[in-house]
Image 1 (cartoon, rainbow, N blue to C red):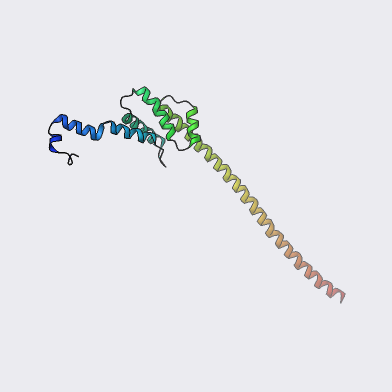
Image 2: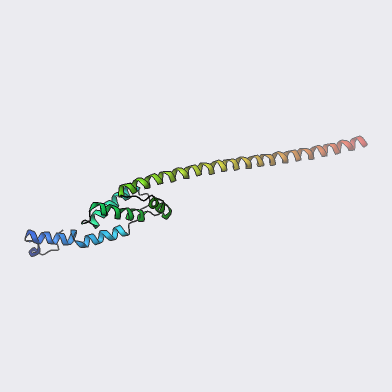
Amino acid sequence: MLWDSSPESTDTLPKLIELLTNRFGGTKQTDKHRMELRYRKRRPNESLSELHQDISRLMALAHPQLPSTSRDAIACDYYIDSLNDPDFALKVRERNPSSLDDVLRISLQLEAWIRDTNRQKGEETGKSKMREGRVATVETSNSAELTAIKSQIDTLGKQFGALMQHVTV
């Protein structure tokens, strides 16, 4: 980590601490974490719990001087803003969560309800498609039966015509 540093800049403990702080822990890092936090979006297939953990981590790194109560309130907004679905984010925000743990609980509950509703809609759509399939099958079946009956009538008509010719002769 220090290969690019001159020996004079690392020959005492205070110099070494200053170098490492500038490189890994100073205001440059908090600015970086603030930017990450600001632009953080939920990734595809990322669970809400994973998002919660990452927002919590970034908040601690981006705002180390803030008291935890203030940090929690700000983290709620970042968490809700990071949700990719604006309608879902609005539903979470409407419940007015007071802490990051509260916003996680609310979002998990809403997501479960949404999945259940979508599953039920899918089942209803499936039932509807099954009904449509049965109707189409009945129509196809009726059409085939009608064709067969027409064919039998044509055959009977020809046989009747031939029989009438023999009778009149």
